[in-house]
Length: 243
Image (cartoon, rainbow, N blue to C red; front, side, top):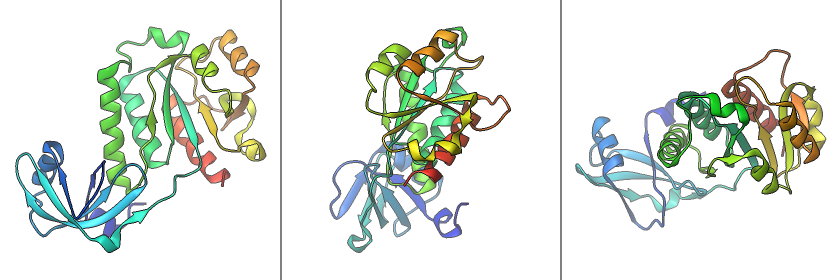
């Protein structure tokens, strides 16, 4: 639930080093003007790499936003336990929704997977321009939720390549026929990865490759869920199960 005090104070993503005054560019300035913020208004800052602070606007223009930090408000937030999400390349809007909610739930990394059935989706979420949309959506989610960490963004990968790159991870493949996810509590030792299949499901050989790589199949219920619904539910559950 969004707290009233957080909702009343605008938040901005401010990467890079901070000193007494943080200067942000055109997009944050435009956002501040849309919200009718002016000099003296309180704001919150998040670096996306574990730092948060409060401050006040010292100046706002069409292409710049200057914020005077309150040094005593600076916080260093430890990174949460590592949970990586393997999102199927699919419908763009549904991928963007999942990316937004994944940040709110504290995902550590976002890895889009090109499955065989991904190729039948058009238009699908892939390529550099789409990754930029994902990045901006994640920044918006960070600002809205008051989080401190943005996930690492990976380029989309074929399944085989992704498995080869992720040999030292506790992998969980969501599958309605798997054992209940909650029963894997003892096996969920970070780093953890959660894989979602594409719309229409995985091919038999794709399921076999996950099993050969040591991934466990797990279920979050008997119903067949859309991939974004399954991802949100699984992330929330895994976050509640691991330290």
